[in-house]
Every structure is written in C-alpha cells, then in structure tokens.
Length: 241
Ligand SMILES: [Zn+2]
Image (cartoon, rainbow, N blue to C red; front, side):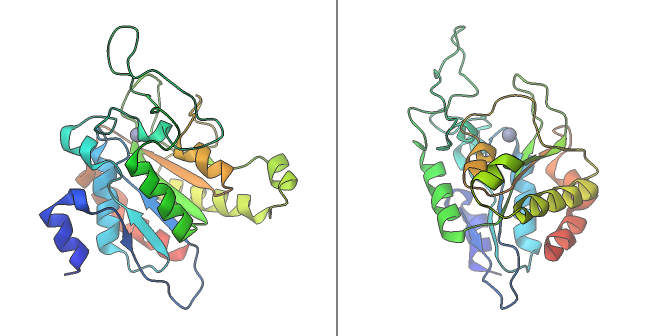
C-alpha cells in the first residue's frame, strides 16, 4: 500500500495532494479536485477512488480541498468561506459573511482573494503542476441557484484567445475533454452555468487560460453509487486524454 493511502486512512485531513510521477510519454497534465464544498462528500469520495485506481502519469489529484467542511458537513471551510468564491480571479468580489437575515452567507468569498490556506495550497499546486486541464468535482447540492447535474466547461472566448495570442487548440482540448466526460457520466455539457461565479475555480482557470471542467454530480446519489455507475469508465477515459 502506498504511504499516502496509509495517511488517508489515519487522518484524511493531512492528505492534500497525490502526485503520480511524470512518464516519458507526453500526456495532458491534469489537475483533479474534489471536496471543495463540505456538503458534497460524493465529490471527495469519487476523487479518492480515482486516486486509488489511476496509474496515469501527469495527473495531480486533490481529493479533499476542504477537509474541515467535509468533517462537519458545511459548504464553507472552518472560517465559513466558500472556497469556490475565494480564488484570486479578476472577478473576485467582496461579500459579507452573513446575510441580512443573520444566516451564514453560503457564497462568502473571504476577506480578500486567496485569503484561505486551502486555496493558497491549491494555487501553489497549479503553479507547480502547470495543468493543461482542470477537472473539479461537485454535486448540485441546492444553495440558491437551481443547478441541474451537468458538465460545465469554463474556457476563454475566441476573442480572448486571439487577443492573448493563444493557440485555438486550447479550446479544442477543453471541448474534447468535456464532451468525453459528459458521455461517460451521461450528463449535458454547458459552457455557461447560468449565474455569476466570482472567485470560482472556473473563473480563475479562465484567467490562467486553463480549460476547467466542473462536474456537477447528482446530489441525490451517494459517492459509492456514482462510482459504481461510471468510475471504471472514468478511469479509462482519463487514461486516454
Ligand atoms: Zn459545490
């Protein structure tokens, strides 16, 4: 058994990243993230299963970005910050920690961009691994916006790609991966989630010109059910990319 697996069993909170070493064949560098929202433990379970199954070079997996939230079943981290609204994207917005009715703001973005230690580690992982594709697992756990299960692709517009002198292959790569993932998961692909997501990983990835696929699993299913439905197919798919 790998040492990280032992660490996982002993204390999940200490496991942040699993690095599978680079092979000689150039493969797409992928970063996979689960457990951003503690109320969506299926996302963490699925990413953990992938980490156990994958023998794919160039894949970095962070199964549980928000271990404190997972532990106590909260959307935010221990400070009540929504990690998916706290990344230092150009569109980050200040927001109050509490709603006018005194309840916690589920979309609280923190005191400043990247104020949270979990996101500092995520940013470092992106800088070090330099992924060409990011896959982030969530569920459609209801918050405020209706959000059906889907595969959402965040990617730069054609104009931005030209303006920034980037290769059009960037978009092809993102769309190709999103289409394959949607087929395996039997979910629709979208390129617009339908509401603003300031400070999200999708927004931050767009700034960095990295295609980002957000998988919104069906929240009504347990992690084990999701894994049984398509886990092995997902492994095979990642091995192809
Ligand atoms: Zn989520």
